[in-house]
Length: 270
Image 1 (cartoon, rainbow, N blue to C red):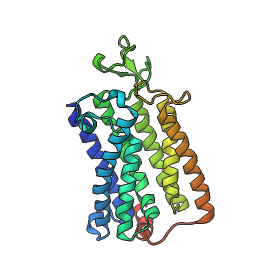
Image 2 (cartoon, rainbow, N blue to C red):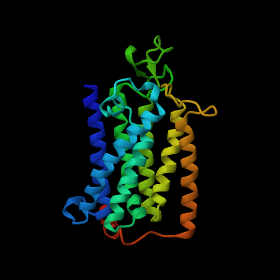
Image 3 (cartoon, rainbow, N blue to C red):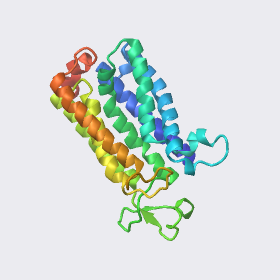
Image 4 (spheres, rainbow, N blue to C red):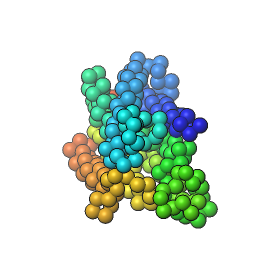
């Protein structure tokens, strides 16, 4: 049941992100009826494959101590263990390659995709709930998550409830999604600034949520902080720098890639 639920959450996240990206790219609710929607499907198909490979590689490299000795274990994506940073990197690289080959602007298309990634990540986090993984420190708060004894780390076998970090990240991602979509419409962001805002919003939440987690990984402590916390810090600074530089160098928004969405946006939003 756990394996099926985890996969179902991933599938729902992919579907939601693909639909939203198609809606933003073509300006149509039924984006598949637009000839340009074909690019969305191609990016989704190849990007998902690249994301799964990247996510698993990241998990195996940074959490090798949790990987069993069987030869097939590094490829066992059905058991969970998908590192979000590797998934984003793999999906972006493969997706960018597909967009580049189509002749479209990679940065402009990434700006279209960014809010959908937050939506997909929010939905996908429920897979951690069904797999009873990636929870936080013990807590007696009313919303504490009860974890079965078989899934509790060593040293916490006598503790029943833990911080539901999957829920915290789900709520944070939904809030970040709303902020990014609002800012994009309000300020007509372009030239990679939607992506930068997505990275800043996500890493800001991921940093403090990561500090609550107690799962053991091989590269758990780097100068007193978890590796994923350092990753969040570095990416936040890089995204903020890009946002400021891009705003000064390329004010405004590209008109070619998202012209259809901009024309229909007033009707779609009221």
